Length: 182
View 1: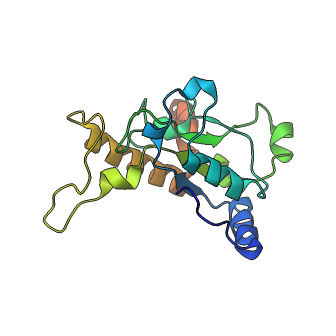
View 2 (view 1 turned 45 degrees about the horizontal axis):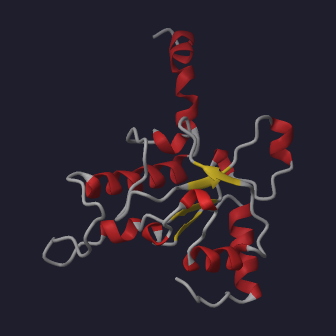
């Protein structure tokens, strides 16, 4: 949220240590609609606040989720990562091209899992259900299956964080089965 105070230095140090030891944190600025021209480099107040808070951490370089990233196939096959909004982007650690570059990464993720995920699509808002089973917040633009896909995004994130990059190795399954005589 805009204007959120910066956590104390000790808290930021614990967050930094958590990510370096293989933990993953998801930040959702919930402000996808606040940016009218994403190509202009304009940032919303919520994004500016998050940048300020994260500026003292030793974070890896980030990129938008590549088309072949494990997050796109950890359980469901996804091309986009909608929440209440669909216009935002999901950011993950830029994976190094080779093992030498991986040794120099500031935050070492376990099993190739990014230590940080950042979106602006308000995932939790799309997941929020009242006690009577009805959605608590409206969707924008409100496509018929948008809420279902928001839940799929959540499932993929959880599967990715819990299982690592095992899906990236699925290409080797035929050779493994052949070796096992099956």
